[in-house]
Image (tube, rainbow, N blue to C red; front, side):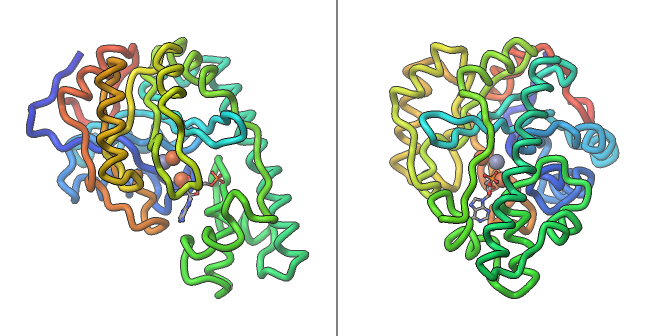
Length: 290
Ligand code: AMP
Ligand code: FE
Ligand code: FE
Ligand code: ZN
């Protein structure tokens, strides 16, 4: 397994146009090089289709690409995000699960658009499809972008604060596996599962310590500790839990291009932590040689 110098700048959580980011994978990787990153993880929601383009761009711009995916999960009606690093994309059950979620995302988004349109909001399904181009994994941000373009809201954040949040009357949920199942699939596919932003309060609820403990028992490899949606005391809490359960602590930006204020490299992962994750995977890094 490759190892990285202590000084390596590593950001393990970003989104491209293959989900709800605003930059194509190649553009994102070029931006990562400009931001001084040595390693970037591409973790689109429920999609691995951006890996190939990121691989080519990584070689061109001398950036190591960690191929990943952010798997939407559902736990007691709450949304849980599981990052999977270097799983085999050809693993049939994992690929089928991701496809099932993406299909459900499409149907669910269409229903949300219908609800909004019949209440007079300026959005149609064809606009959402046109706006999102060849996106494989549609989400609420794609509705937000149309509402913004049509002048209803100044930015994605304002749309989420009003009609798009999970407790809005317009909200429709989509299929998502239980986190234990997603962890098992990522492990079976040779990848390392890391729980994303467990204590991000802005999402309306945070996850209990007991869930982290259960997921650690179920095979979790790591916990995202440094993340802009974690208050300082949440970072301490996450860091304590990681130590207690032998989980690798990561940090990342959760970059979405211009869709969110998050900037590449605003939080980073240590070379030692990345090494500890890579040791647990059977996959190949992409992009530049480490
Ligand atoms: P969905 O995947 O369709 O449930 O939508 C959730 C996604 O919307 C998350 O992955 C976030 O990246 C994005 N999101 C959530 N809240 C906001 C916000 N306030 N501003 C911009 N994007 C957001
Ligand atoms: Fe997102
Ligand atoms: Fe997330
Ligand atoms: Zn994310």
